[in-house]
Length: 132
Image: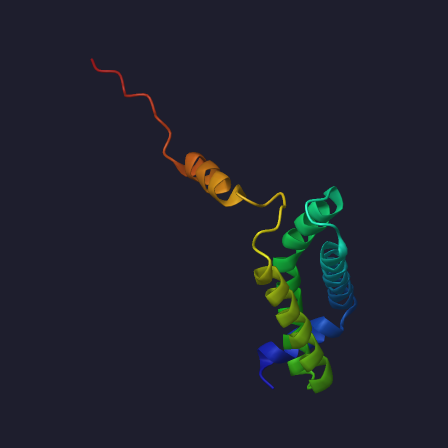
């Protein structure tokens, strides 16, 4: 095992690493619960809107957390945990990409956020130095 893998394994087994993994796994469970609520809710209802918004907000960080979890499982050679982690990660990705017509807060925000970022990063109109 390389030194990088050894240090990652040491951190994953330490108290701060375990706390971070626990918080991350809690976020993944919340993401999956809101996806279930979204699937069982009436279309175009407030409950589905909220569930879809929370799911879309937590999906990308949940995939990242599961990726780290799968990497740690590979380091520890825990193959059953690795397979289950990949299954959860693929499920979240599939559910994230499956329903594009959902009504949620994020719908249409991409262009608005891109415009805001463009305005923030645009060079400011400065004052010309005085002539004379």
